[in-house]
Image 1 (cartoon, one colour):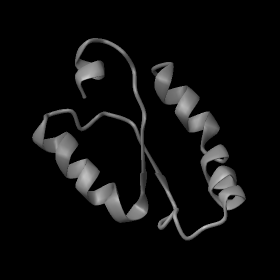
Image 2: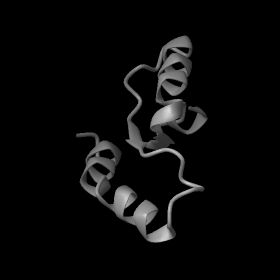
Image 3: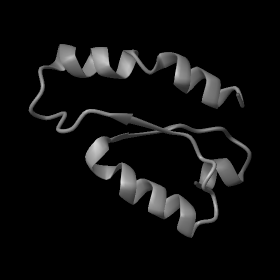
Image 4: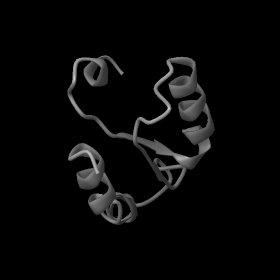
Length: 69
């Protein structure tokens, strides 16, 4: 959130188990518009390739959010 306040675009990547908490934090900071990408939980129990595939499937969302779309 500090980067965003300084004008540096960010994207937060969280697992679905933490998405609700992440949204609560953005609301508390009055920054509800911050982009958040939600991936599958738990990542520690998944093979690396599954995590990479999940994250890669959100590539366009990340780029769009960083470019202000």
